[in-house]
Amino acid sequence: MSDRIDLATVNLDEGAHIGAGVAQKAAKMLRDGGLVAVPTETVYGLAADATQADAVARIFAAKGRPSFNPLIIHVSGTDMARRYGRINEVAMALADAFWPGPLTLVVPISPDAKLAPAVTAGLDTLAIRHAPGAMAQLAGMIDVPLAAPSANSSGRTSPTEAAHVAEDLGDKVDLIVDGGACTVGLESTIVCPSDDGLISILRRGAVTEDHLAPFGTLAVKDKATDETAPTSPGQMLAHYAPSVPLTMNVERPQTNQGWIAFGPDYPANLNGDGAAFQLSATGDLKEAGRHLYGAILALDRAGVASIAVAPIPNSGMGKAINDRLKRAAAGSQSPHSTRKRTVQS
Ligand code: TXA
Ligand code: MG
Image (cartoon, rainbow, N blue to C red):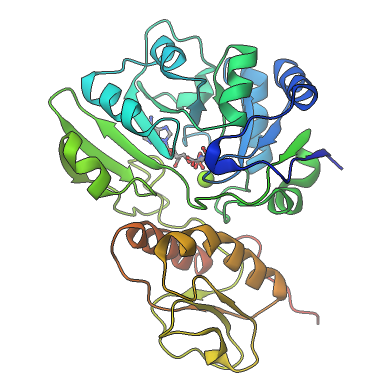
């Protein structure tokens, strides 16, 4: 078993820091090339010192992540970001407005950035995020960025609680820092701000088009591509997948189906006594984002044969939710889906 430190009282929204003893232990493990699962406001990250090739290789091995898929580095603040990436004016304005927070900036990598080459998977750009709380604190303590993808096996649903990490990655992690449930629940918005003011949205998240619009001209480039042709990293169609088929936009689930309910129009009892999970009884999209992955993981674990999801309005945070659901649906039906449930026979 990996060590586990319980920090259930940490408020991820406010970016609470970890206590000195825990932080020292986690920082030492990171310095020694270890893998530490660290909570952020979005999802749990699987962190390693981004300058150590062996430590970064352990991330890819633990997740079963293809080597062509680059990692996000997590920094302690804009000063550290500037040491590794070229932050243009638009990027700086976005960092000022949204950091620490659920926004990742893809920028040209600095020529003297001494990162493990696997972090960027051979690209000349680098994804940088300043997350609130423990992740930034630990990066500051060891004075190097932490490479940290979501702490799940590649292609599976991202963890929003420490228990999800323990279940999925278990022994492959040296330490899990338990910060309770993530307050956002979906991975960060990823944008690439060009020098001429164009902001390409590569992955949707809690920082929405409405939030970004004042900072430049937006281009949404989050089209899901086929897994075999990953021209844009991070946009593989099959992703976030449960081990059973998932269907979106279901208005009337079957009685034996796992059911992800949403709002008053699609209540939890629509599938009779079947396993169900209400994302938000009032139809609040932020609350739904926070609960989505936990719902998928819980129904998957409950052993349902398939999962039906109620229609989610495609506005604000709803766009990010629908993006993840689309990929989860594709992934759950894909031949690459490796954890197909074996029914007792
Ligand atoms: O909220 C988050 O972003 C979480 C927490 C832990 O910070 N991290 C996360 O990491 O979601 P990951 O590795 O699961 O997703 C990062 C995505 C990947 O899809 C990767 O392809 C993309 O970012 N990415 C990394 N570097 C990139 C680059 N230079 N250009 C385009 N996409 C990049
Ligand atoms: Mg991920």
